[in-house]
Image (cartoon, rainbow, N blue to C red; front, side, top):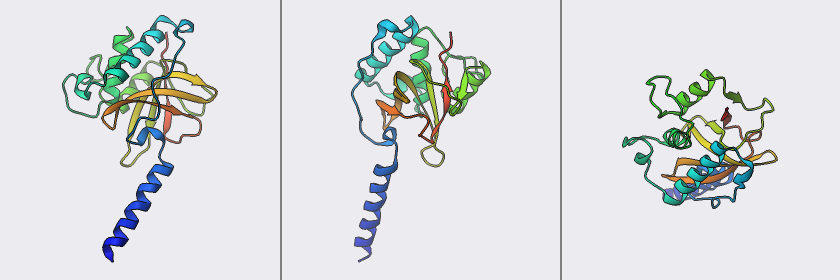
Length: 185
């Protein structure tokens, strides 16, 4: 009897996670890489989109983006893409191009005057970085915007179930979105 109860509780818990969790937390891809018209983008934005599409296709291991270090690599991935696009970030702690943590990534954007908290009426653009903090076991995360339609952004992120994945986020309705690291000039 206790086994049946345990299985039922686990099934309800799994159903709840699938029902309430934003798609970026689910262990499968929710969409293929989107078609993006790069002719309307700046050269940096177009390069970011191209690098993201290649990374999504190639699906390298996280250590590829983290300098060989086995660690959560979503911020490493953002750093790698920005460096490849000729728009390198600077780790405020080490001076290196690689920023390995989301908290430090937010600190970087804040120190440059390029962080906008969600709820300020800002509409992200291609190349902006979305910063998340869901607390608890989910924790912090980051993705890069590749398209915006109305109040929904299509994003690409690394370290999502060990992969690079594409998602959509309605930033003003997702309570996990903290804000945006703007691409800037």
